[in-house]
Image: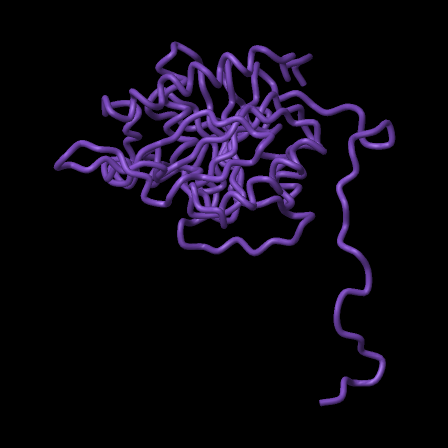
Length: 287
């Protein structure tokens, strides 16, 4: 079938590239008031358990006697209200200055787009609207004094991750994946974007990596051995545990109550905190 006159199919220009940060890019990233360390949790694909890992890692950090907040920047599919038992919570209050007051549960301060829109309402925004929402959720929230703010990013390498890296200094990123090659391929893409934004990669967490047979108590790699990216360090391999899904749906992260989950998440939290403190802090003059 002939194409209409003047219409060309295919790419007419190469895809955009992300330049390394130089003096021509905005030099003054803003710090987040009252936040000492900023930790991003990302994934190359959806469905790998990133938000579940973020919620349980935040709880495990809190178990280390740290003041922890969690910011749900997955604006199109926020999960933290459900995972933290805040799905039916009232809308956040406002300070006299118009800043959002985080909700709190399980010892965590939390802010999410899910608190601001009805749970069934789709969010259909273009890039500039997403960037504005990210900016407001980063800087227009009245966080208490936090040792670490855990940021749950959307999957992939879209506008939210780019806006985060350009607007504020991130002390480190943990990448979550499952062991399949199809998921690990996208890990490398996400790592490359973070490095171009000068965000340190703390390491990789493999979720659903092991299954322990209830009869013989032998661990099995149900997805086979992972082919890890050569330049990303493995932080932890998390087992398949039905309790994780059940408790998450009930709004009680099992890192708070389940000894098996704690045996994996607590050492991960200790190591992540150590690596965050091996780097200069994102905190600066309060804005």
